[in-house]
Amino acid sequence: MQNIENIEVANVFHRYPEDIRLKLLYLRQLIFEVASETENIDQLEETLKWGEPSYLVKGGSTVRLGWKVSNPSQYAMYFHCKTRLIEMFKMYYSDVFTFSGNRAITFNVDDTVPVEPLKHCIALSLTYHHIKQLSGLET
Image 1: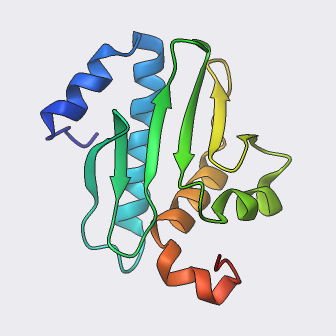
Image 2: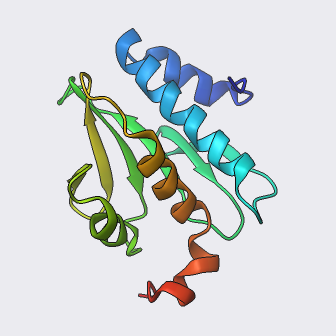
Image 3: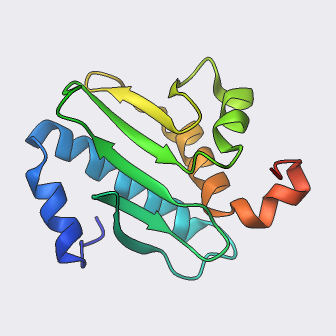
């Protein structure tokens, strides 16, 4: 697993309950895998946005990971709500994922993460600005 170099990000992961931390670290690992496997991605930046671990690349749209105390058995992968990414994900995977509005794919702690569909969604987000004109995703 990729080391967390940003101390602020590491501290956020450390504050999550252990079961949630492990789930979110797994999603983080998938993001790094997708970034390394995808053409035109030179460098993945790990930072905090809205106090949550966030991942961005030049030419892509931010992917953010989160968990809320108010809903302790659920965690999420968030996408920029002003894009049409969730709309696209629903076209492909409405029967695979649970969505929260136009901003997130949500998981319950007992869910099995559908790896290949999720990696596809991550790739679409990380390459969003390169693909949006080709796919009719312009807003």
